Every structure is written in C-alpha cells, then in structure tokens.
Image (cartoon, rainbow, N blue to C red; front, side, top):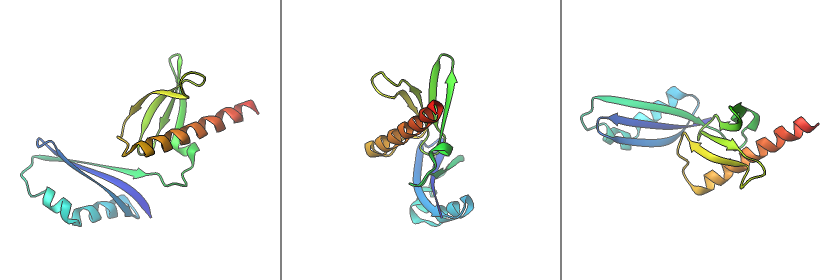
Length: 134
C-alpha cells in the first residue's frame, strides 16, 4: 500500500482541497478521493477547469539515495528532494547550517516535518561525503 497526496483545484474559483490516501496505485487513490463526501461537496459549484496533482508520499523507510539528488549548479552545490514534499536547497556545510536558501516546491505540513526532512537530507549528505573520503 502506498500513500498519495491528491490536490484538486477549481481553476477560476481559487479553491482547492487536499487529501492523503492509502492505495495500491494512482487510479485507486483517485477513485477513493472522488467517492469521499468532502470531495463530492467540493464539486457542487460551477467550474470551468479542474487541475489535479498526485504525489506519492515517501514512507518512513525511504531509501535516501533515491529520495535526494546532489549536484553542482554554477559555483554552488545543491541538494534536491525528489519525492513529496519536494525542495531544493544550497549545501553550505561549515556556515550557519548544512543547507540554506531552501525553496519548497511542495509546502510542508508542519515544523516537525521540516525538521525531519532536514535531518534526512543531512544524513544523505553525511553518507555521500563519507563515501567520497573512503
């Protein structure tokens, strides 16, 4: 079973609704969302277009080697989280913190989630730099 975050926006109405859903695949996740009463009520209004985004949420047992990407951009080193919630940050080890100038692609749900993701990113960088020293 996988966890998906589904966001549905009514374009032109500036309204959106989000839900986390446990499902085997994206189609099953969408079916579960559309069958739920909060979403049925959401669609009672008139709307022109709908935008749906589906992101698979990483589980607690995520493999950080498949979750983060480390690369050079100009004269900076960057780290990018490539699963939900995604972000890009500048690696600045030895300055104020290990990762600065973080740009969130997907909004985190809480300060605890931010702290957890930064710890995982730090673990990824430590593992990466330790492998390069060997």
